[in-house]
Length: 137
Ligand code: ATP
Image 1 (tube, protein in one colour):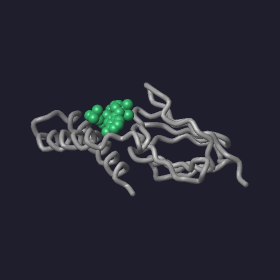
Image 2 (spheres, rainbow, N blue to C red):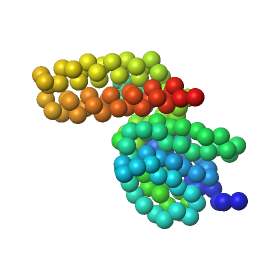
Image 3 (cartoon, rainbow, N blue to C red):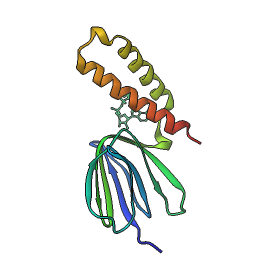
Image 4 (spheres, rainbow, N blue to C red):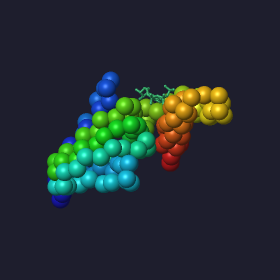
């Protein structure tokens, strides 16, 4: 059987995941990537989206990640993200409120500076990603 790798997902506030797993799939900026034990080392930025790993029973677990980096080494994957939470910890009502707020801001974009448009778009993406992940079956 293949060796396990260590997966650590951390934000500036907390450690979100610290597990031993067979496989990690993550949303890299250039596309989704998978890491198994023995992978060639690499470093990448992440897209807002969901990271997936298998727990000790082989059950797939999902983690929301946003604005991060991932470092893959032969025996570990480390994700540093601005925000991250396990699927079960996503507050869907909060995400829906964030989505509404972001949509409202985007409608007002002409009167706002570009930076606000970029921020609102990023917030919209986070909210959509959280809602999709929380509602996934
Ligand atoms: P909001 O406007 O609701 O704060 P946001 O997208 O701006 O949403 P982030 O900056 O991504 O929030 O995250 C700030 C902190 O709040 C992080 O610790 C993140 O894990 C947590 N968080 C944000 N939204 C949710 C949510 N819907 N469910 C659970 N935790 C959340």
